[in-house]
Length: 198
Image (cartoon, rainbow, N blue to C red; front, top):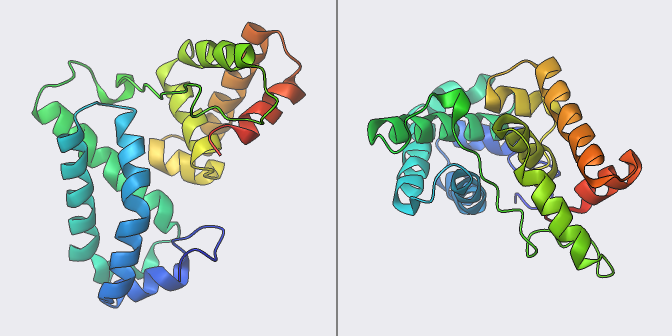
């Protein structure tokens, strides 16, 4: 049901969940569990904590399903809810001694994830990985959501709780820094990022 849509959690499926359809709920859970888990791994290595946050996210989704008819961006709602739940748990357990806006975002942009094309030079992959790791935390998160999760800027803004303008600015600054660090034309940087993690 959900694999034929550009954005799998589309409005029709969302309405099924809002109408207490357990099959739709189950499909969404199965499809998004790994994606949310991978997203959570960028903030913490505590896998049990991540799984607990995912469980609570879907419990919240089910408990408030009857109020969900008005949700315009179901996918961003899921990521937003999960992100807040995970940050709350991290604060509760005092795993991080920092505020939410400074939470460490550590995407594993390693060679396995950076399969751009078969002919891509391994040295370029290492250079890109190094450049990505040098970006500020918020910029890395925006890049991850834009090029890995393929979220539109409006949804990234909702997930990160910033304005759409700030989202564009964050991604733009990140790409400029990557261009400067790698010494490549912006067109090449965009090409690399478009095929990153696919």
